[in-house]
Image (cartoon, rainbow, N blue to C red; front, top):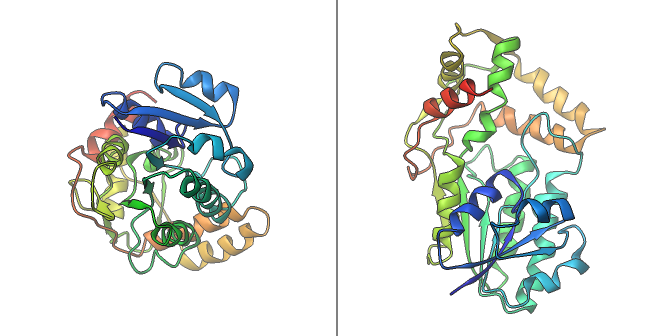
Length: 286
């Protein structure tokens, strides 16, 4: 029986991981920051402990007696998310703060959810923050798996209300390709990573789509004719630099969005769920 410390348990992906682990023999300890988050996980995790990845002194106790850590911790990539802490502060530094007490406590393995990093994306601040931590993990002496999914289905959820209100922005030709993956299937891969000997694993969904085809699926889901707002790349680039002056994360996110509009980001198919069906479901209940 393996004791798991799950970090990021109250995030969107983390909640799916908690549920997936509930169907296994593993004992789950969830790390949360607030009493309210602890209440939300009651009945899902075997144990809930308080701690904050940005406060290293709170983490040692959480790691004691743990066999494996799963970290889904990362700053949100949704455009309407509050908060200005950068990806370097959360995705890199937060996970880095967890690594030292994990080693000291004798944790055997660390499963980390990173992101696919093809050339053109690896240079962005968002991906660089994740890769910087991945490099530390590789040198830590722990057994590890770095999971590299393509875009999560949930990352596209904001497109539904945007399409209903004013149409969708499109950068360039929209010809860059990717194969997004369902969040629940990423969670399943996290659980598989506990026993896997594979150190890095890239995963994607079953359908390879261009960025424009993804937008077309959004409009089809809401039953409307596609309506696009062409956005010059130079405008996004300049806007990203200006935004960084008052909100580093949003500026870095704009940089990332521009990069993914230009770069193919495809991984071996792992999931079977289709983005088209996900959009239809979201459109029906929103």
